[in-house]
Length: 302
Image 1 (tube, rainbow, N blue to C red):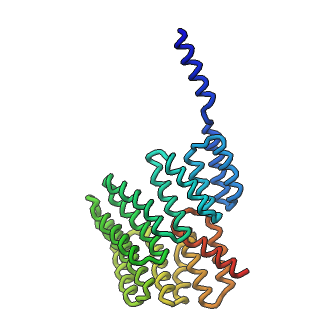
Image 2 (cartoon, rainbow, N blue to C red):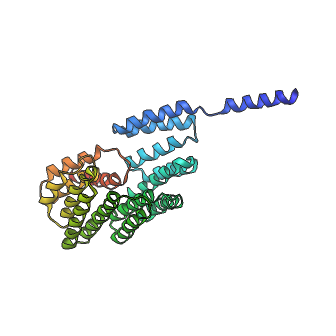
């Protein structure tokens, strides 16, 4: 009887000390809404309140890291992502690892980003999720490419293409989709290397694969490709015309439009596109490169 009473008292004490996660999670959700509206400081204040309530709340650490990256506080962001990786449940750990990789991408540090992307890639390979592993390989390749490392970009894009082939039930449409992605990547790499003719050959091959894939959802990536190639091979008029047909919600496309207008001598239009970039509050590889560029260009224009 006495032992039972002691256990009940101890259980009650533990319950009294438990951190209230539900109110903290509500604060995180409110903060995410504020972040989507571009109110990073207000969002961060709510995340800090959430962490006062629940110091080990994975979601609050992850969300804090995201807004700190968007604010340009990269070192602080990575402290939060480190905690998120430590605290994340198994099914959420890939999200935290990728967020850390993106944080390094904001500073163009592909070498450090790769350490975290590789962990996600290896886990998907171990699980025989070959399509998922291929997508992560492509994600890392893009970080390398936009960081200016075409050699590693080529290596990882090829790895993404070849890894996806291991999926046993790939359809002809799937095969052509992955071929489209591989040709798309090779065209951009060639353009970054200043090899215009080679880039155009891959553009033609990418279009053929896209047509065979018969995937309307992928069509929007073609004008991005032709605009990208045009920009990096010095044809800014074509770059503007094609990029305007691409996804205008993609901050990297908006940044390329800004740079194309700038190189064409239209500074006003360029500044407008840089401001549009800053309206994006996404935490992904495209914004990791577009947002710092836009901030720098707008600061130079003032």
